Image 1: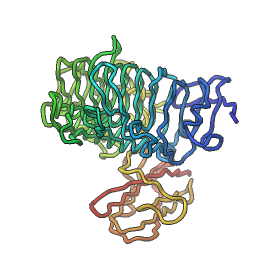
Image 2: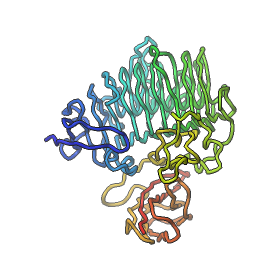
Image 3: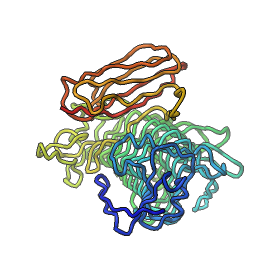
Image 4: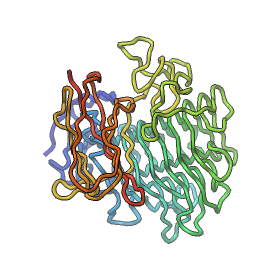
Length: 490
């Protein structure tokens, strides 16, 4: 059954026409792919929370595929709706998502966690040979919109028979003009482009965290080609490559076998031109050259960026960005990146209607652009960065730990937070405000397996949304984290 559906999407500024319909997964269609195949142009495939062991393909459909985040705006829905690409029916087609049949910008992927994809065996359209590409998402000949996703734990590091190398751990883009907006792209890997590959393409990459991705020589004898965070090469006509208001941090690159190898821990630009504006490029590592690397005539039109080690261009700085923490990458109030981006009004942060002339959180300062992911017109809070994706069974023993919803919620002024462990670990439980500032540490100690609860008193806090984050470090110091939202109402 197809359900007529009309709505306004407040955060994405779309109006869905009256003829568009919603296909619910799994309520009406058992899988995301079955709903896509049943959809018509302009429809929305709305996916309920859960883990979907699928490798989906848009099949030329200009449709919206979205989690409940589309309606709720609640970032918890992003983490609760998982496309796990780790069980492909064909090992050579193991990207979580493929969009490769001419889809335009109205083809949208919104509000998912994408994980465990290992890429698709792909013949390069420009004669370079066959590669494994796009661990999380493979985009070719298409210009979709990829927005508000958490893309983690994907890889393009396989080298099956007949392939040269592998790249685009999170996303591989070719021959199109897609929009990649407000995503967290963290902890992916490849033998080039640990985060994103732009190959003979245009693209707009804006307001993303691109962090802790890696390029390394995963297969002995396979060449690597650099670009820890981004790998950018060659032209698609006159289509521009716009890299704007991103936070590109903690990416690494190593390996050998090509002139590209070991270059561009943050980004590598080869044989093309890319525009870098209002970004933070910091704490990336490479074995050769600089964090923003150039090779084979590649050029970066770089303005108003904070680049560690410096980079020539108007408004560029070289100063510690002063992050609040290494998960959210929010800026401290004294960060040199606040109000340091391009001063043109076209790049202004959203204005706080209650404080004219000042930026709306999570941007800070005045409305002048803040460098990094929380600045510019597209500024918003992102999917929270967690260090692992924990699938918790609805009954029985939790996997490692489970953080329950607080009760009561909403609360005034006290609420109780309950969690369980099935093995010993060093546990921290902290409360944060919407800007990522720590309000209180409730637990910070070694605990045995068991059930626990902690009382949180918000008597001294203002009404609003807060977040509580449980982190557990077990044997080998593996750290897993889960975050939930709570509402204080007075």
